[in-house]
Length: 427
Image (tube, rainbow, N blue to C red; front, side, top):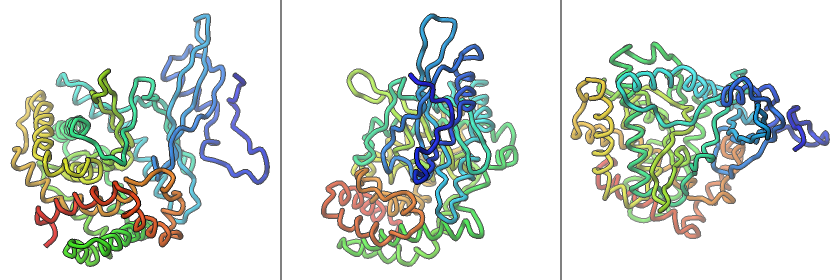
């Protein structure tokens, strides 16, 4: 293999630079040394893209295939996953540097605290990819992780929604994340004082950044309004959405608030593509990994649960299995808390009530996200078009057309609307 360690150069003046061009030899060497030790010598490396359009909207994710040598006779190979600032030209996208900063901070500062709290009470570490290297310079941020594909982990089909076996794994691991946070809270007090970047959140942003996010959310809800206008029988949700469309950011922010028993460090972005699964020989999922911890926040744990339930789970399962899911979550949370010698801070019934109290969060997420989640990769909008809003009419028309052309949209969307109506979320 030829040595591609030098920063790739554009072949012609017309060829645009890509985020992948940020990766240099020194970055790969740093990741390799952390992974394989200081004696590992980099022989060659090459960028290998593997994601599809729609897998990641906010950042660029690629991989680097590495050949290295040790004292062994033959060269060896390893692959790393790299998350990069996509360097979008859209006005207002400086928020990407904020979320990259938050994820680097999570892996370098917050995760060691969380894992330390778990290990001190004899509980295994959180299931996240191994962090190897980060560069935090504004505009050229990057993070190297182990490539979990080497251990058999893969992404489930977001379009279909997760079944009960997958969902149980996610609920249990989210509970372990939240419970580790609860242990920290009892040890150190408010974790936002120890980790102030937990306070930096697109939902509570101000000024131009808030205006930018408000515009994106409003555009997404406008698509939901058009869908609801085309579907008969949900006029109550249609009118609620129209009424709350201009103040969607305020609604989101109010839903993050929680009483002390439920305030934890949350994942913050619990849609199905942010979980990878490992399977046994029969095809059953046996382990989950949490990904994309770039919008972690100190908020109600029920916002994570609502986000996951109403964006990631196969629709009919929400009504039939939600009580089992909550019981599995509570048991997993209790196991960690009791291992620390602490009293479980809330009962299962109190958890159920907090879950219900945050249903507005889940409804807003589902209205905006489901039409995109069930789209094929070919139909997904380009990220720049999505964030700029310049192609908003075309994107919304494509969503409307998919109500008839995509057999996955109507049942997935209506299952959430039926649940929210039955739960009395919308008056």
